[in-house]
Image (tube, rainbow, N blue to C red; front, side):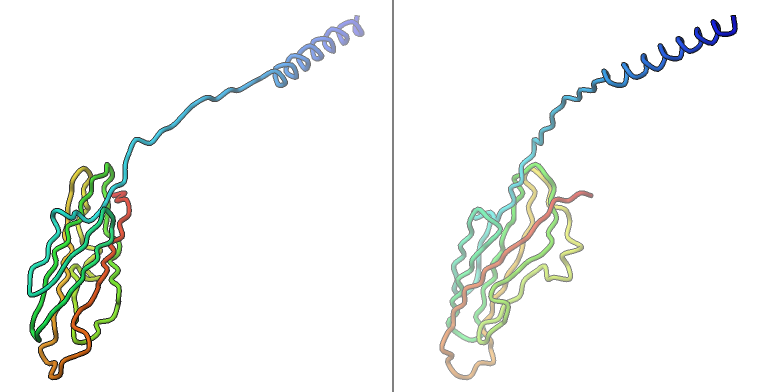
Length: 168
């Protein structure tokens, strides 16, 4: 009888082990899914809203984050101020991270300043999605202290604004 009980227990254990092994080998996990992003990134200088005022200038703005200013000043003290409008036509908020100006140096006789300057970029508000705008102002000036006529009184300045997604 003792052997018979042992045999029944052994057979039960074999059935349990076989059931667990069968379940482990036949378990199948299928994961099906998809993801899509329905957003657009379109930040560019707005040619229709960008303009220059002053003594002599042209501004060339393309549908990008680059603006080329061809500045030609004739007399000491002449100046030109270009107001460049950046527009966010995309569906994501953006933040200005840098403004790069080429050439970097302020060669006499024409010097220029850019607003906002590098130190003020961190405090700029978010460029909101779907039509938000902000301005970058470039002022060029013919040095009043020039006493002799220089070889060149024109300058081409390229302004590049870099934006990243504002993750708040």
